[in-house]
Amino acid sequence: MKSRVLLFLVSAALAAAFFSSCIVEITPVSGKVVNARDYFLDGVDGVTVTFKKADGSFEKTTVTASDGSYSMGYTGEGLYKVTARLGDDWFFIPQTVYVGGWLQSMPDILGI
Image 1 (cartoon, rainbow, N blue to C red):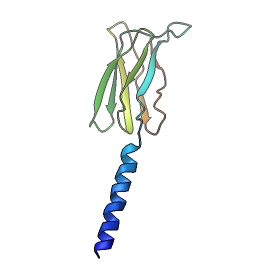
Image 2 (image 1 turned 90 degrees about the vertical axis):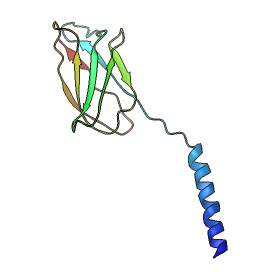
Image 3 (image 1 turned 90 degrees about the horizontal axis):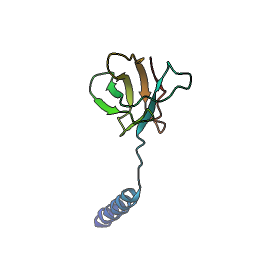
Image 4 (image 1 turned 180 degrees about the vertical axis):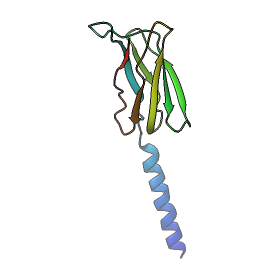
């Protein structure tokens, strides 16, 4: 009986050592807000982008960079409503997206 306990403890210690050395990379969510009024679809600076989980349990906001890109830490797997806002002169088409797996690149958010 003592040998089984000892074997279990050694196995558990080896498993803990193995899994603690594994690096899990969580991919951030990223995308771009573009000007749909412009033929070149240039990025829009300073847009507030909000990810809100469909069940209302999570909400996170970020602001676009000068090229219209945004990035935020991993939001967790699930269905999200993505909205964007920049003053009263802009309208951004809201999207519902699924975040999950290793691919976290979102479709462009169009602004007019």
